[in-house]
Every structure is written in structure tokens, then in C-alpha cells.
Image (cartoon, rainbow, N blue to C red; front, side, top):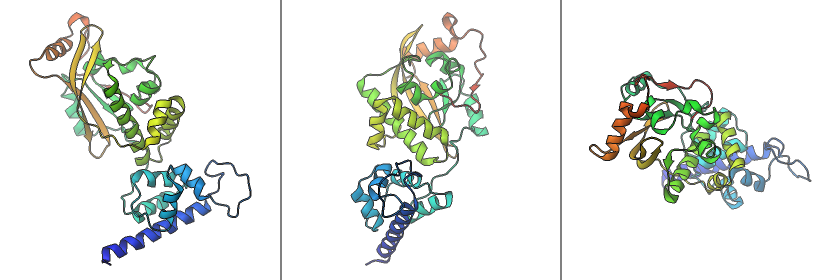
Length: 306
């Protein structure tokens, strides 16, 4: 057996022993389960932990026996939450699994100074900044004119995922989606929220958002149970503008390294009819923008947004 294989086996055995020790010390009450019934040990049964984590009992048995040595980040995050691991224990769990511990704390909202300067120079592009959980951080006037002003929404509806799955009837999106585009968008949003919750397990607002979405929308709950990973990518979207009609644009999502923010921006193919419509929007024809300062950026403070 190669040395690397020996080390992997040893690490798997230690990981299994740690998971079992943490399971046996966690009471049902601590895990939010009923405490009734005769129990030979005070801790969680394998069936109970498997249910909480969303894995099979067989997989948990193999994990505790050191035969499942590469649990996913989603499984590790769910184990850490179900077992109520402290920060140091959570880091140990990831190290034993050969994975890098995700950062704890809250989802970042602060825009780095250099990025802010870049955003300020892009006033001719419909643009908004979102957190990893799709809360709106800021947007420019052209975004507001194209897609509607987030300032008019209540705080919860400024979360893009909440607005789509829960508050769509009251805050209808101007983006037109057929069934295929809607399915892709839904998968991306659910995967992104799960990723944010796993990456920032200490952020209570993200956990509460996910719980409320699972309770409030059966479609979201169904997608959440699938544990699917749907990467974001460029797309084309048709915006139904109330004054200019349909405008088909390219939509790109840029990720800001180090701050886990997303910049969403729209652009049109040069020389196209859609580019002409976007130019009319910039020019403020038909009184669309009034006398607003085109360089003004609307920003959301500490409250939940999008």
C-alpha cells in the first residue's frame, strides 16, 4: 500500500471516530428532536443523524467506520450544524476530511474600495451588487429604470430568491422567462443559497431565510432536497420594460474575489435594436429617468436586501 493510501485510510478512521464521538454526545433535544423513548445511549441514533444531515444510514455507517473518506462540503456543513460543533471542532472536521474549512461569520456586504471605484465608472451599464445569499447591496439608476427600483420594495423582497419564490405576485419581475429558463434560474438560486449557508454557518439570517423559503414554497423545498449544484454563467434575458417594451440583453455575473459579492450587469449587442433601446433608456427619453444624477449609486445599509 502506498504511503498516500495509508495516510488516507488513517485520516478516514480518525474522521469516523470523531463523527461517532460527536454523535454520541449530542442529545436529541439539542438536535431539535423529541427526547421520548428508551435509549441505551444519551446521544443521537445513526438514523436520527442521517435524517438531520440528509444522507443514508448506510453512508453514515461507512463514514463512521472510515470507509467513506471523501464527504462533500455540503455533507460536512450539514454534519457540523446537526452536531452543533464549536468553531474549533468544525475546523477539525474539515481537516480530517481533507477539505478546507469555509469561513465562518456573516455573509460579506462591504464593497472593496477599488471595486466601488470601478462600479462608479460604469454608470452607462445597468448594474447591481448582490451578496452570496442574493441580498441587494447597491444598484445604479440605469438598473432601476430597466428592472424597477429596489428602493420601492420592502427589505425582505430585496432578496432576489425571496422575491422570486415568495413575493413574485406582489413584486413581479420584469424579466420574461420560459419554462426552461425558469428551471435553470431556480436551480441556480437554490444552489447559491445552500452554498452561502454552508460557507457562512454562523449567519443566522441566511439560515432563517432558507428555512422560511422551504416552509413557504413547495418548489423551493423540492429543489433544496435535491442537493444539486448549478453554477452561474452568462445568459440572455428579455426584460419587459413598461415604456419601451421587450429588450433582450446579455446578463453576466461577476464574482468579486475575497469579498464573495456578485456584480450583475446587462449589455446589448452593439448596433442591435436592443442596443438602441438601451441607449434610449440612458438618454432618459419619455421622461424615464427625469433629472436623476446618472452617477448616483443607491446603497443598502445593514438591513437585509435585494
